[in-house]
Image (cartoon, rainbow, N blue to C red; front, side, top):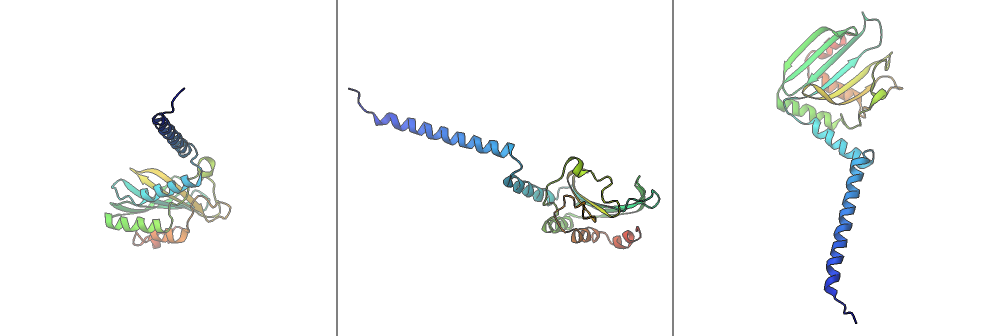
Length: 200
């Protein structure tokens, strides 16, 4: 008659528990890697964007480009404001080939840049998903109004782009109020308001 040995059951039970935990871990990892469209992933992407926005490394910058109505080459206008830890620039343009009209370039410093990007963060500046493909093609968007293009930059390359327009049918990807964000950018350059006011 066989005798019952409880000491053999405990190692087998522990092994089964470890295997179950490993399988559960692999399933969770697979969900995280392959199902990036869920709410948890959106939240993590927003947190990453917040971290990237407030990074004050020398190669970081944020940019706002405003494009006017789509009119004749001679009367088309646009402008760009770019802020980095070392520099603040405003360039106004004439025509679709971006011929500069006026340029202002000023020095900046890390504490000033830090205050600026944290203020942008509190305005939900980059708290949205970037659009792709045709949805992120700004050509011809809002022909009778203004297009507002915002980018986070690293080494002068865009790492995230959000946009909106003054046309209700082209709301874009920016999920924040445009007026306080624009004012914050313009306020970084003395005389910017008067220079921009001469464009249209």
